[in-house]
Image 1: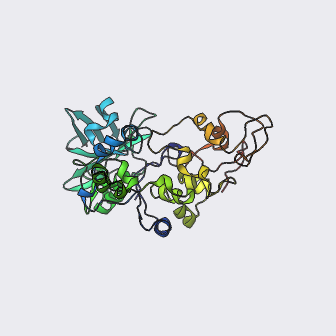
Image 2: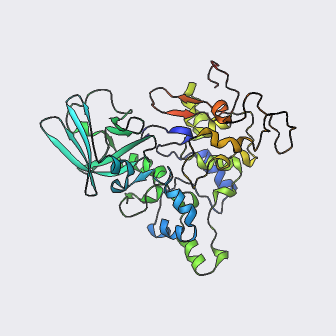
Length: 375
């Protein structure tokens, strides 16, 4: 199930997909852990919560909460976009859609000029760095609101996944109907810890992708640390995984490379999987930590969107311009053209048809102007 646009610079704002190949590989390598980031909770009491994590790891916790992952799903009253735009409307044909925040309550209204349906917004999906979607409930059923907030426009626009046909009734104008399994699929990546068995608890738990999504439930870890039993305080840490495995771990939610290889998509559609494109790079080496996701991206911090900020990562493998001799740990050739903004040239941004977002192509290469897109 697909909740909408796939985001900028490899940030994927989409529902999770549990990839069997990655799961099996993780299980073989770390059977004592076997943790996956899109694993929903089975018992609420297994989780310690963000405050408990932050009591020992304040810097990481604070930065991570402000990151795109930390805000992948938020409670409506806490959404920054809605605080900055407390009243927004969009018209499509005879229908008018309105999002309104009033005294901490956020509502979605659909009107056909005669009748009106108003429902509270259940959850806000996406941090608003690129776009933001809204989940509502009507008569006990979930719907994805038919309008999104687009940051570049600063206003609401139509859901790009919506049916092109004009809704026939006000009820069908409430947006795409989502089954419980659909919503569970979305939350499994956007906010796994809010899924408890077959129920969703967006109100009572810490939403979004927090510490325990990647590190696993932390209640036992916290209890052991407080009891001074460090020998019993082990918790899963993806940073210790081999680069190839870490890629499999991260792309459980970031459009799996295994899924891409199985589908063999043609054209720019494949850029929605950073791992798939990275692994097609000549310089990719699954055993080299510099080829891992976390070598360039800090999961505890907001995404760095300026490509020049990644120069130090490029120079971890490549020498600088000027004919410097290659070393064993820096075997990559120097660039004969530029001295900065390596990713701006060698990881070009491309547009996927029907998606109003630029994607950074993680297939590192010499991207000559006018050259065809490399499959």
